[in-house]
Amino acid sequence: MKEGVKFFIGNTLGFFLADITNIYFLFIFKTSKNQIKVDLVDENFTELRGEIAGPPDTPYEGGRYQLEIKIPETYPFNPPKVRFITKIWHPNISSVTGAICLDILKDQWAAAMTLRTVLLSLQALLAAAEPDDPQDAVVANQYKQNPEMFKQTARLWAHVYAGAPVSSPEYTKKIENLCAMGFDRNAVIVALSSKSWDVETATELLLSN
Image (cartoon, rainbow, N blue to C red; front, side, top):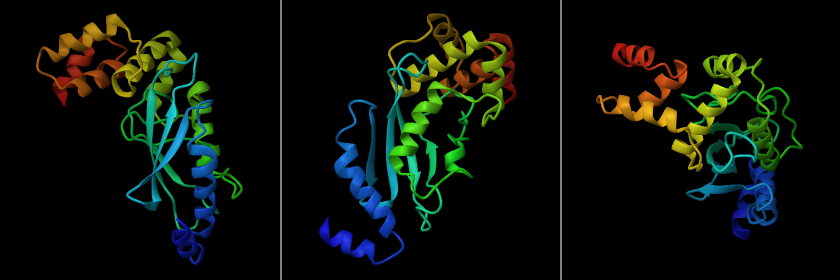
């Protein structure tokens, strides 16, 4: 690690290495309270894997969400590029690509912020969505028009993709019925979720694709 420190201090990743060093020794192994962590990918300091736990008292509770984190050469003066690897149903996160709409990952980033700040902010976003500034318009519309359906849908996605323990038996049955017709499970979940769990319109969408 010391040789690596000397190497990275000598180039544009010096700031980043200081951040990573602090995270590794002060943060990664002491995350029981907030349940967040960051790991290296193939010892590459520019590509990381983050993980956050779904916050309590939210549809995401009990889920574990993997994040792709890419560090630009201009870090810490520009924000890291972060997206969800784990599929999630949330107004500010794309249900297709995992892209995130969060101000500190855009124009509100400050060089003093750390990756810990980013992960905690993402946890806070899961607990308090901003549907009027959405990344996924379909999810945001459901969030505003039918909050209970949104909660049940988000909980089901948390169960299927993030390992959360609780799901809707009604929604699960609809998924199984369409899967029995030969449709792909992921496609079925997306179709039902985006079509307000109406089997007929979801089937039409699946057939059109």
